[in-house]
Image 1 (cartoon, helix red, strand yellow):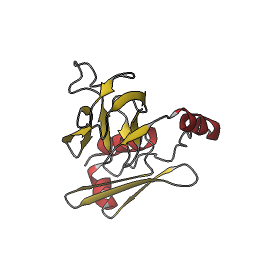
Image 2: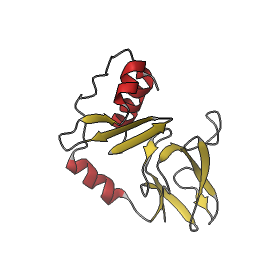
Image 3: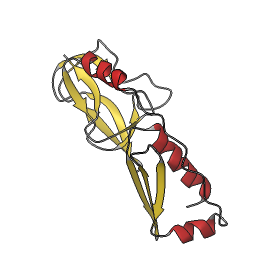
Length: 158
């Protein structure tokens, strides 16, 4: 793992709602966490290996993270109506089967139990997420390309 890949992981963590990201590649183990002070911290059991690969250059990963304001979080909670379709895993949300295709669903679309509503990519595997009940899509909670957490609502069905 090179320094650019580590910087990319830091950016991914900063831009997501995740609080922790752990990657193991061979004998190198990288763990990134957002701490209470809203900074990302790099800890590694093989930090010396990473430093050697990066020619002893360690990225500055202590830049403050942007946090959502509590009133914005409350507004999002009150807007959600219906039964949630939650992410069964941590991964990247894709609204369509490929970048050139139309999204699987849109607000107002009727879905039946078992219909594919999106894809979540985890560990380079594309996992189709299906509707768990019949209904109409009342809200789409994430955008294409967003990193999602386990149990995070993706959609709401009325």
